[in-house]
Image 1 (tube, rainbow, N blue to C red):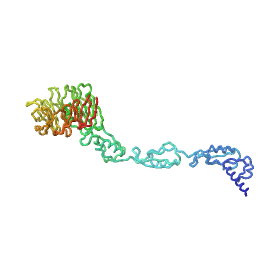
Image 2 (tube, rainbow, N blue to C red):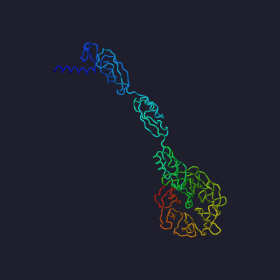
Image 3 (cartoon, rainbow, N blue to C red):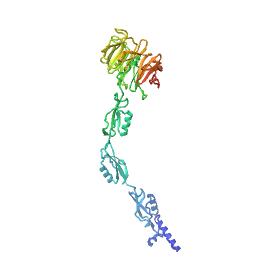
Image 4 (cartoon, one colour):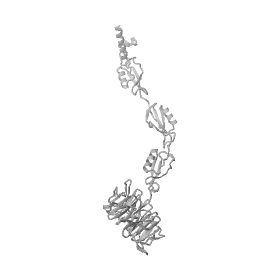
Length: 530
């Protein structure tokens, strides 16, 4: 019994060796005829399937056989691994016999064709014919027609495994979207809205003013809201420049030589170096618009109306420059100094210390310098343009000194309003403020200038803002309510005068610094240093 078990174990071991190594004819091999086992020139063929080519060559050549091999693509056997052998493992062959192997060439690689702008049907056929499978998705495209291939997952010309999946994207044509309403939105809001829904924005450089749309908000768009257009279309917008002045500066500012004015969020101001700047009170941006060459006396009487800034250079004339700093030009030559210059609507009104006839007569001309005409022979001063009328004092008249007159803007319908002597005149809306001979302030209604109400205020440089009257007493700036009560010191005036520009007070400080502050004197900010 023990002998039988031992023989079986030996047979099993020999069977294992049969498939892993070569043996000579002296080996005891089951199922091999006895006459073969007696032949010493025959060797057992080993099993090399699943081995790498290098391993198989070594194993077979060590047994004394000659090897040849060929390659075949395979989806299951890795590249360079033996797929099969022509001689069954365990077969007894003479030494130097030929053993042929089939080696895996790996998965067959096929060059992927160019499918872009092919029809779906053609793309599927081309891929199928080459042995690929196809996966299809759809997307919008502005550049590829509907139902044509937009892109492929494997680029044209690159090799891919046979039977692998090639993904293609087919065009649904351009996507169409509804244009949103942008008017009234701020520019940043409009940009965000268009970007979120898939449009682009073009901001036109047109300077367009509006009395209904705030500065910096969208005034108009070239594509109507609700219209259906292609995604990624460009929507052009015009941004409101805010309300345009109809009168370029206040009379009070002009009486102080007009060094500052405002339009919208911008304060325009002159420097002692003959420069013009603008400063945005919201964004804190400051821009130099213009620098006048070689003027000794400087620039004065700044007026801002629409897209133009008007000013004069002493002994040179009246000039204008666009609010973006371009197109500076001279309107009229003039040898003297303009004591007053106001731009109102389509006209420039002025008088000076010199004219072809005599000084201090009131003239007007169109804003391009044409149609210049004298509209008063009076010796005019303290000129106010209010509504359809011009109010002024004439220092020399047939009746008495410094009479108050009113006339139409064209110089017609001259009317004497008050024959008494006065030093100052400032009109703000329906309120009229008059300084008498002792520099005491009186208030009246424009409809009845003869009815004066004393305000118990003594000062100079009268100006108004909101519910307040501003004036200079000594070297300090004060304000009172319009009825003359609630006197409050705002700030010392350390150099020249002050100006009210929009909702801000502007004044020159030491060393010609330009400072702005709120109406109550708070938030003082230096916006320019020389």
